[in-house]
Image 1 (cartoon, rainbow over the protein chains, first blue to last red):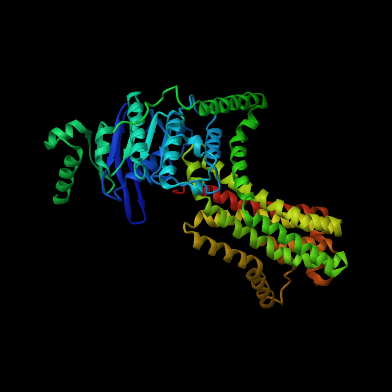
Image 2 (image 1 turned 120 degrees about the vertical axis):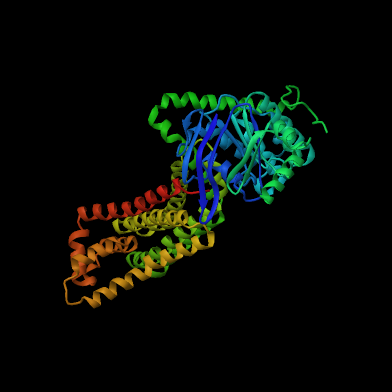
Amino acid sequence: MIESTALSKSFGKLIALDHVSVCMNAGQAISLVGPNGSGKTTFLKCLLGLVIPDSGELTLNGRPVLQGWDYRRYIGYMPQIGRYPDNMRVGQLFDMVREIRRDTFNRLDDDLMRAYEVDKFAHKTMRTLSGGTRQKVSACLAFLFDPQVLILDEPTAGLDPLASEILKEKVLAEKEKGKLVLVTSHILSDLDELTTDVMYIIDGKIKLFQPIEQLKIQTGESKLNRAIAQIMKQTTVA
Amino acid sequence: MKPPESLGSQTTLAPLADYNSTVLKQTDLIKSSDRSAGRAVRNASPLLRIVKYVLYDILQNRMIIGYTLFLLAMSFGLFNLSGDPTKGLASLLNIVLIVTPLVSIVFATIHFYNASEFIELLAAQPIRRSVIIWSEFLGLAVALMLAVLVGIGLPVALFAANGTGLSLVVVAAGLSVVFVSIALLASVITRDKAKGIGVALLLWFYFSLLYDALVLFLMFALADYPLEKAMLAFVSLNPIDLARVVVLLQMDISALMGYTGALFREFLGTNLGIVFAVAVLLLWAVLPMLWAVRVFRKKDL
């Protein structure tokens, strides 16, 4: 579904992505794991076209997407920190995005909006919202247009336990429908529940990309966090 | 822990469902009107859809209202002080040539940096990058021109409704657009907000003071050579100078400007000259913007 070939990006001297070649398919839910600054967010932003890679290829459903824009209709994105115009009301924000994307979606998926009772704070301006509520708004926007690909950057950070459970249920439901889900998180127990595969990125390179079950068997651990800890130890020793 | 309700249940929260169905109906309506409106409108519509929200955001800003009121107060004040509308226009011209570029470039720069969240949100949607920056430009240009039309146009229409007055208002509106364009270029190139505002102020300083000083210096240094035709080129290279000359020529006081003034009169005083001046001002509005679009399309957000 999404394939990258030798994708590279550097910010000055810092190499954020170093020839990343990877193929991700529908129905996969992939955890992106790696230390801070390892290139996870840069990779996701490249997929979205927010960051323009220096070199390499990127295709979605076989079609090249670098420098394109229309392909973003297939992607729902929940940023790490949802930043929105201060003076805009929540309802207005949804209206605007709906208006912008009005020719590009088949179905509106308002399950999350209902579950988070967005209409109860639709009249508030974005400035007055707490960090958690803002995350809820980001989550609703990511799922609203029923996209084929979901990119979730630290989705559960800042959400209360209840909201985070609702989100996780939703992610699982979408994965079952055969969507491609990409999640980064430092809360590995969440990823253990949600995802089928794990991609470990360090210094802009993909250290490993394999099904979680396989990784657990290889490392002889029953939990993802322990398996990852083992991998991290190996890489620091090596 | 179990979530309170299974997702996607149809039973709960009917009001929002109603709300959504009305929204859907509305979008259906818009879609059908779109179809009849033809392709040109359809291609332009993503831009207009976004400009609407940009403009809404800017017009809510207190600074733009304050700016309009300031222009109003200043214009009325100058006309009342000088008694003679022509003198009033002359003093207004001097202040307008300093104030409108300064406010336009600073306001546009600050707005662009403050809109970074909005821009990031839009950039993740299925729209072209160029659409995003053009809508920012149009929103800013329209808002600042509105401020000029109300703040300067209204008093001028009341006190000096003649060709000179009109040229002053047109030039002030044009300069606003030119400096929005320059501001967006500066802010697209510089990442840091403080640096961006610094660059904007420097550019304003260059165009309204430094440039004239440089030209004067050049004139003294090359006093032995005929520079009159070169002066025409020098004037075109600075939108503020061009604006000043255009309005001064309308005022019939170009005799005060000596031989160069006569040459200006000969060229810029004609209809062709006016067309030339407007075209150069348009270039000043469009070229920096085209450059800004080029940079913005490759910019990491």
